[in-house]
Image (cartoon, rainbow, N blue to C red; front, side, top):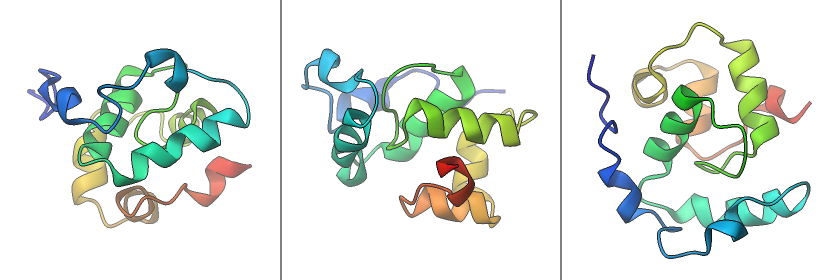
Length: 108
């Protein structure tokens, strides 16, 4: 299976493409500030899907903090194509992620 974002060319279009990487890999409450950059990003969905598929452990990706992504991965351990799920599915999680909302359960 070839994933839409597999070649990573989407990353060059990211709102953070020219940002200092150290500014994106912060801890704690600073992550919530950093993710604001993501909400206007044209490739936010690709970034988030890649981070979920790759199990990125650190930093803000696609507008979600590491804690929020871990909560999603714990709840959906068998998902193998996050891009498809986020862009096609009509379940509550996908709709929230598409619209830039942090899923309610991920904040617990």
